[in-house]
Image 1: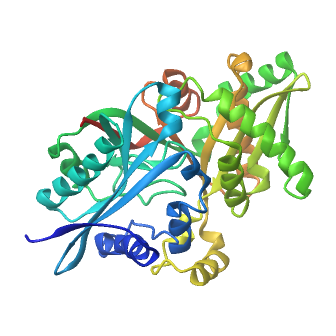
Image 2: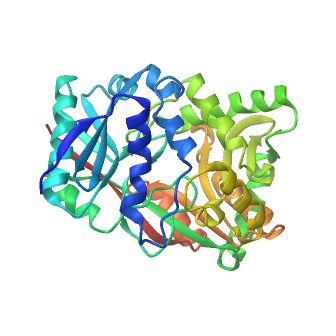
Length: 375
């Protein structure tokens, strides 16, 4: 196959990069088309504050048939400062089922990363651990929930044959309301609330000043609670505000909670309605049709994704996480939500994985893999 690797250099080729994704999922009923405007914003180095400390280079594999593959090479300077390493990343990877094409894309991304002083290539990251990441290796029969990736089954083979090896697996759990509440969990959370004087309140979405105050509180918890985790990088103030303003558009206030213990901030949790259950019908990725599908198919949304749940280190053995999960259940039961996805969870986060399977009867139904390769 004759093809060439071209660098994305302007807005026109950036749009081609984004729109090319549709080619790889033409006959895949489980793929949820992204919003073109949202993808453009994520990749815009002038709008996304991530690029104030990081760099990205985009490449297209093109033949007479058009785009047959794409990849992003990413240098996350804050990651390398945090972890004292020289890891570069790849992301936004799409490719036809052709090893030669995939190898050429990885080689081009690797060449650029080497020129930036990197010695390992890791991915997929789109573009960081604070965004969607990983290659789906289990659970292809299910559509992705909000802010989770999806890919054809052959992608893992392309990546592994290009010389990559597993670095870390990430799990996603399915939670069913009818299985979630057990007598054990009811007794546990009631006992913990009383012992540690735990109260739960909702994030204030109505008052702008209070919302920003709550965002600052959540940001502090997020950066402290996740700091020990593999691959974690603290978000800058601008990055966190950028994300919060986006999430605010789709959040259900009932599912955005802050936990306090004896009047002191202890943790928070956020679940988002799975708007992918509506957006899966928006085949062209344009905004106005997406809004129409969200309005007319709102009743189809019966699932939430527990996107983040964090407890400050000094409260991590008080069981606040169990209480927050229970709150999700109670609030979901009182609305039209019937299913939940908790993810992603690091494979070696034994406490969280054990709690999701034993205490909450969760089903480990999807696995995403992060790969590494020396360069």
